[in-house]
Length: 172
Figure: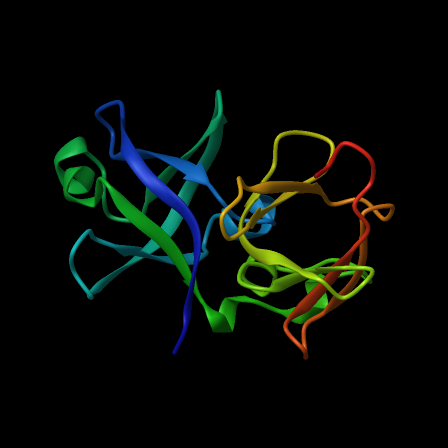
């Protein structure tokens, strides 16, 4: 079974067993709900710790989570730092509207301009505000930042592992 990254547990929060999570998911309101099962992958270990969310709140730029049966700081201390993941069973393609994609579907795609010149590969997605920014790793050049807007992202072809873009003035 595959697991997809939805966040990183970076610290504990208070003494009642809560943890601070930096979210990297495209659907935080779906992924962090009471009753959801998530998995913590501890650093340098292949094992996953299954956790059930029984408390969720936002604080500053963090998602604060509480897990069932972990009621004090000593119960969650071992989780930091760890990657927070969900199983592929928890992902439903029905969640997506036309033109929407999961982050894991986009990261790793090759990027081409309108003349079929390969520009690089998408290495990460940033969410700074109104729209996402796709970060393209280019050989021998600095990273290219592409806003996820229709004027720039012309076609996403998951089958052929390809994104076609139009580089507007100022993007290169």
